[in-house]
Image 1 (cartoon, rainbow, N blue to C red):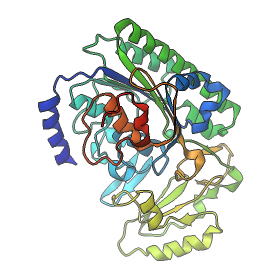
Image 2 (cartoon, rainbow, N blue to C red):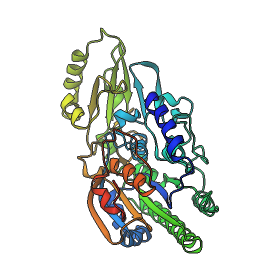
Image 3 (cartoon, rainbow, N blue to C red):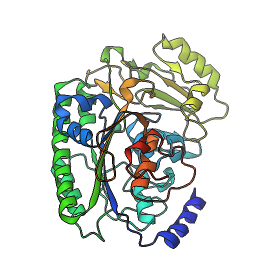
Image 4 (cartoon, protein in one colour):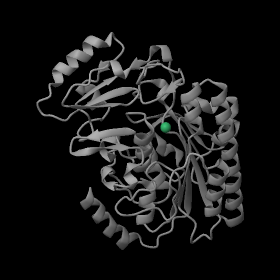
Length: 405
Ligand SMILES: [Zn+2]
């Protein structure tokens, strides 16, 4: 990837220096906003924006449907086993330390690919990120012009007002790309469940801030003759889980020669010692399972494009809702929603709404994939795409008014 990026840098500097695209994009992630939340009463403003723009009913997620893998896939157009962030926490067979959310900031070697904000900067534009997983890490030695280190306590008002301030800059300094990120809906979904009043309250709060954001964008578009677009997207949905069915990870084997990593919906065993017996471990796990979990077959992993990377563990077991793996089982009963399950689980589907001068109005696309977002956003911004992307924009291309390749 290093070679490819160096090539890109030269190409970008040579061809694209100084090119300013007419369209700008504000890309907003609402973490854990399940596809059907948009039809709840609390999301009325976002729903009205969807009616005036393009809406994808179900945005299918990458595997696993976890925050960091999915956000990096949205940002780079690559699958987790290509961009390298295969879970929120994982290890690799070619290095002794393990990744934890945000490790890319200290060590960019965890990351591969060219995120949208880097693509913008490489091709002469300005990118401003107010949170997005790994948007404060260097890709190809480049950072966005503006960025923030994540702090969940940052008030929503501060995020939205800063985004609008960036967009108010004179046209030649206005960022081509602004990202925003809200975690409140995901937190409420985990703590109280997808149907809880607390989750409805979180949806209503974010909905109001999206309303304020769009109002500000429209004003700039009218006053400055700007072409600022808004895309709302989520990384995954949320399934209801039941603490009485949780699987206590303390009851699972932890044999010598393996590094065991629990990831809520699955448990990964990395083979650290070549002589460690995988089949014996698989057999032991099977004896203990009582149908609550199973080993993910290599065929399933291939079908989910989760293979061929040193971060993919040799043995992975998984469960399904309403179960999760958790140390101590359902103790405390303070967890009522989870994600990370395969995309075949309908509750994992995410949402997508696009509105602005570059997008069709009153358009509904039944289904698209998270990997379609990057090529479509790049087309909107008139950016040249990196090679070897798995999607050409797919069904999501129908959202764009000027349907560029
Ligand atoms: Zn998330």
